Length: 186
Picture 1: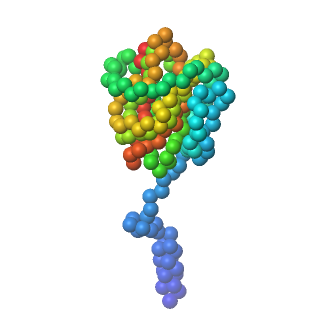
Picture 2: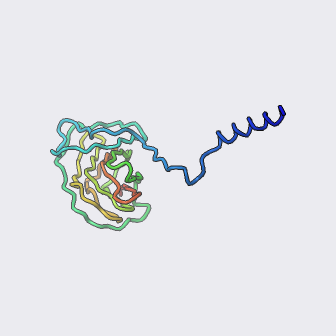
């Protein structure tokens, strides 16, 4: 009798510790970062209400803070083709999900180039990109919250060749999953 009671207790504990059936499980979205208003510094050239965003921490510590904002650039979509691999001096990307809505992320460049381009997978809505150069100057590209479908687009042309420290962007996915990739050519 004691043996039956012991087996019943062990079985009850085993059943209570077992995971729920697959159909009862719910998908959980793990949010990276915290939700807050976009923080802009004195001299930021765009004058509009900033979005509430999920702030994703930069993967690398940002070395250069914007000290002087240059005149903003109003973005005009120009579709381009990706150059040969040897011409690309820097490349990085960020995945976005609709669950997070507006997201702020920073891509560390620390590279010198002449043109900055963006590759979109899925569809994204972009507010702005803040390109910070190694001397503290920053150029804000105003995407005016326009939605862009998949493709490769020119973002900024600095023909004199500038060293970019990092690029901060505010964007959101308009499809379940989307990806924004930035690359710079020499």
